[in-house]
Length: 468
Image (cartoon, rainbow, N blue to C red; front, top):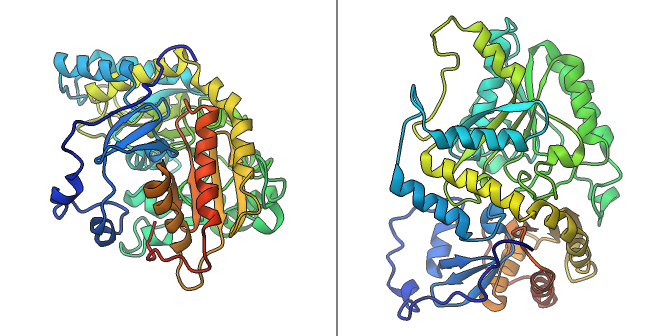
């Protein structure tokens, strides 16, 4: 690989070995974490470089999750770091309400050039949740400015994850993300998800069965609600956070055709799949299906500075420009930190790194080896399904009766503490999404660690149940 080569080691200064014993963890209310359990034995990451984290006690941890699906170019890439440092020293902040700065326009141009043809207008925000809520607002407002104000209904999918804003949890299909917060946004319905282990277990790549589930969008939901009332359908090309649920062959193409038939906007949530995860810039490119909008974040800046974006078809953008009177605001939406200078600098540098180092091609070349390693786990104790595409993999485990999530969490703990490997779990599913710079030896290390831990699994793990 041309370009940056990750350092072979990263040693912390001496004296940090007792950080977990002296650090006051009481004040930080941690997100999506069993706080009481975590704070009884904190897992502290103190440094990072390339494919590895370093813990507070100096142990190197192979990152099998790209942080949180986001550090695609590897940790602390020097070009991205330098761009952020230079921007911070030049100008720390500039508003984008009625003002601008060069880097935000450079970032939008670079992102538009990378996007599928026709999607060339960019609205920046700060993370994936904001990008989803922004896209939903664009969809609703688009129909209204065109005089089609009856289109107020939004359709999501069961087991979909679209962030934690009120719009995102409404179109999302995860009960735990919704049950404490009331009805959120009204007028939302959901498609069934396409996971079918009975027919598609151990699929390599896209499952063969299930494309007909897309027909339910027309036959069930549109028949029930009237297509003239539906503004948009939002789906993840791969449902990542609920366990790597892959679209069956032909499924996304069917959804595109139904949306076209009824004038419904199709939104791809590519917060996870964007920027090389499937060996292409976007999943839309990989599948050959172009949506009307793409939401992205995470890999947009290699996670070095928070940033999200909605990439929009030009005619959608132009509808707002044409509907508003001259010299008036066309779209009443935005954030203080939209197009933040540091985030914009990180974005420009990150997209350059992807191109200069050929990381999308590298991911595509590594995908077959990654697939073989993943499916080598078939037959190990309690493994009930393995599914993969590109550099993403889900390993579904048989749960412990009465203790949901316990088995996968036990594997997670042992991988971290005993094997020096970071994995992610969701329910009783192990989800893997390493940085795109991973090499074959690191792939071997990752799956060997999981295999060794699975071989030690008992009928009932000793680790307490935890919500992942």
